[in-house]
Image 1 (cartoon, rainbow, N blue to C red):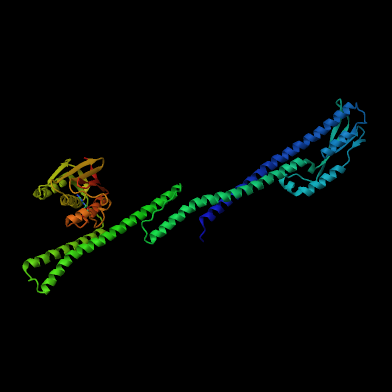
Image 2 (image 1 turned 90 degrees about the horizontal axis):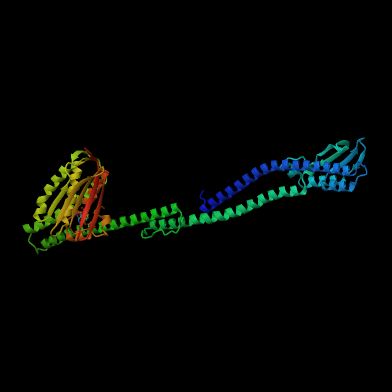
Length: 467
Ligand code: ADP
């Protein structure tokens, strides 16, 4: 089942809000309830004590006169919802407040909140209690006071209001929190779902081949920013790949067409009897066929590179000596063109390296440098160590690589416009292979270049053996 982010978040928020409100009200009802009951009992006991004290005092001021002013006591009994009876030492009733005013309160109590209050504070609402207290004047027992009350009289109307206000406020805050939670969840989920919808839209456009689109989001959510960056990076990579694919196809078509056109026009000239099939002409044929064969060979190499499992046969070799040897091999070729090939090799650097691959790496770099040199050409090879790595640099002062081509020169079949125009006969896979070999060793290759100033390739190879 698919459920939208807005719905999911709102539901989560509502559940969380309701859950916490219920939890808080249960816990506070319980704690407040038990405290409240104690409070009510204490309050009642204080009231009764007060009544006894007041009657004692009244009695004292009347000097034991049995004709006390009962109006005041009556008012007090009604106010406090109590039954009050005063007896003399012989157990004769001197005064009784009567129980009429209690009956009314008892009915009200049972009607109003009896059930609720019973649950809330655990007080037995309808039960009638009576207690007897001694009546003393000047520390002499002169009779007794009987105080009676219904359970409900614990709950003065103020107490009832307090409890119901408490529950009311729980309900109101639950409602307010619910509304607030819903609004908040809608706002937050919009903030998340809006950029997500934008990203989806962009991804769909990309799926339909529009690789120039990019996600523009002003979200400040870290994950969303990261996701849009990844999508944009993906679009960038895909459009680069697309560009490379198109360029490669048109390059290949161009390179195949040139020899084929030459061959075709020659054959037509033979067929029309315009040209005699001489030896020189067959030589041109041969050269063109050679070019085609070379191209097919390059394609085969490339296919091999794709499937090549880069199993290296590493051994402990003297890298310094190997590189010196390769440089010596290249010196005559360079000298023929009056180019300089110089080196700065730290001696006796040893490492766990695949020797054949190292030779191929150096051959590719040195033949590239040679191909793209100009007058007063100079190539410098540097070998040194840095921490646990072997560093090889090949620096030339040749044609350089335009900045726009730099990111792609390690791609299959990629050749800069300069090299295509110079017709160096390159195939654009030398650096692809070089990079693959370096990476198989766990190393990396980097390039810095400026047109007409020169190019430097830097290789970092791990595997240095420290003696
Ligand atoms: P190629 O067979 O065309 O040399 P590579 O893969 O060896 O293929 O190189 C790819 C492209 O990188 C070259 O076509 C060239 O444009 C550029 N390049 C490589 N090395 C150099 C260099 N030393 N100076 C200038 N351009 C270079």
